[in-house]
Length: 223
Image 1: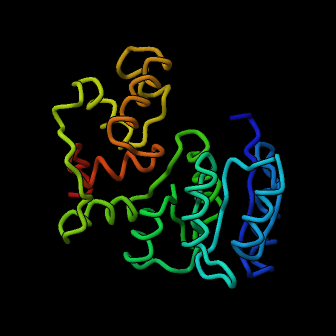
Image 2: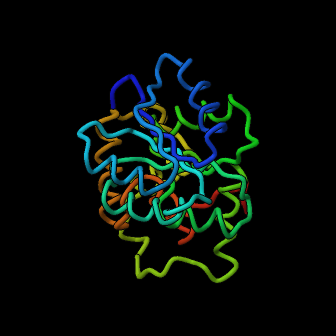
């Protein structure tokens, strides 16, 4: 990814969308390349242009094509683009559904500007960013019968892969993991790619969800 984070904003509330755009455009490392009022406009734009964003920030409730359906399409057609949900809905059902369909972060519209900027930068750096509330929902899904169906054998992972998976779930980036384990960032990326293949996860966010819901790693703060 380049030093400049390319973003698209999707929200039918024009005043809110313009406010977010104004806020983000003041940041030197962020570039807004398009704004859409619903998912259909976003998908149409992406199919027409060669300039794809790094991140799409989308609302959930929108006319024509809502945020959930948009995320499903994006996850299949443009898996390299990361989706951040920015919405007024904070129920566990909405959060879990958006994460399950491919969102790599979930924020409330009453979040602070700094929290939004932190989330964007963390997603750009690590591929996902879940705050404590979202991580707890992912973890709690285990106890309500929503555990991911899988025949995955945890013994299939090496000790090093398991350790790296643990650190990924603790939201460490590649450089931080490399420093902690005294290995090169390239070695970390190799292990991470193996983890993605073994768990059949499409991205790092999916890997985190998979690891927690299958109890491969334990996040003490959410138990």
